Length: 192
Image 1: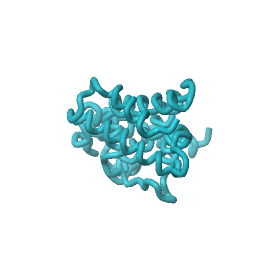
Image 2: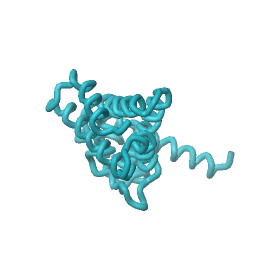
Image 3: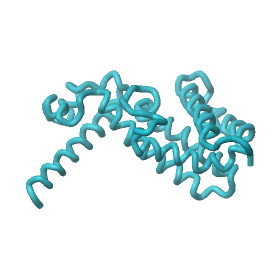
Image 4: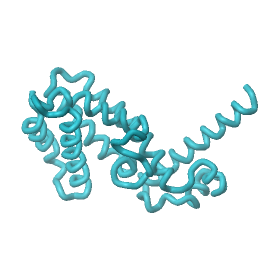
């Protein structure tokens, strides 16, 4: 292995460590606790080393968001791959989405609540974000209904899921009713 290859691997490894540490700290204490000083202490590197990878917290949030989007896409596809029929796929998708949001609150915040400097629904939208949307569209596009643009329907359904995830987490909706909300959402919005 050449010196350049070794250095590139070390840089990539350190970047993964920074992102993993930021995620861990955010999940434990919230994003306000994620500072370059704390990250530097936890990973045992200097702050300038952090800045050689990320210009600041915003870029770290963006890196966490991209990682989370990739994980969410995998989770959505896994949940829907074994479901039999459009209604079952949409139900599995909705449950997997809400489960992901519940199990990964800091990552979910990085993806959809915080400014990570990422472009959404634009030409320069990063691939992990496009793929997460595609995981939704693949399932929801088939139940959009006649005359309804599949991407537009996916945006509306996604907005409903995001609202459920956010309101439930904030204690505005009782979590024990989540299953009934998913059933109602699927029944009323998805044309099957």
